[in-house]
Image (cartoon, rainbow, N blue to C red; front, top):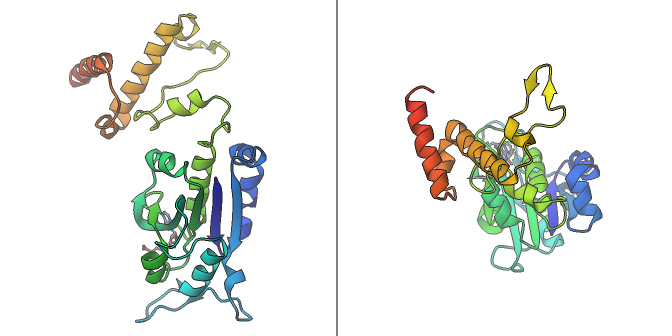
Length: 252
Ligand code: SAH
């Protein structure tokens, strides 16, 4: 996958590209990241990317022209005139919430382009003519889209084939299967008299798998019951959840 980030702060991404799963994805050539400096697409001596909004008011707005030119330079023109498999995204608190489902959908694209907003926002003609989707990483306001772009870059990198060592591990992560993940323990089996659950050291794989599944169900029920509506559940899961509901209603 090719990922292009359009930003006024290209240095912001250096640390993220140097370490962890993103680094692994780059080294294995499963991901190519290009960070494009929006200021390179200006003509004036001050390399101006923003201007005051028509109608007045506080704050500045990113101009349409440098963004138009930056997108053209990476081969994605106006909507409707770009290669299939390319998607141009804008960071925005008003966008659709980015979730694991979105990550799975975007991870198989050939080219994802993320335009990072700044200041009061971006000239609306950018959204109208260039942006396929606006996305938000949560109901709060950042000073710029760069942290949001990093979040998406990380989530997409680890979904590229052969990046995470064991793909099973990705599949059991929270949200992937529609449930939160189970809890984990590691050595020592007893620390200060705090033992790990016995079943995990029993060596009985089927029992361990069931215990983990039930814990994932219980956590999702307690912490994010909204997820259960769309989760992939079998008969045993439903039975377990029915019993859990009765237990919770009885205050246990
Ligand atoms: N005036 C805008 C907020 C601008 S914040 C509004 O109220 O809708 C500056 C920039 O930061 C935005 O243009 C956007 O690109 C980015 N940003 C802020 N919050 C974000 C969020 N929750 N998710 C993604 N991007 C965000």
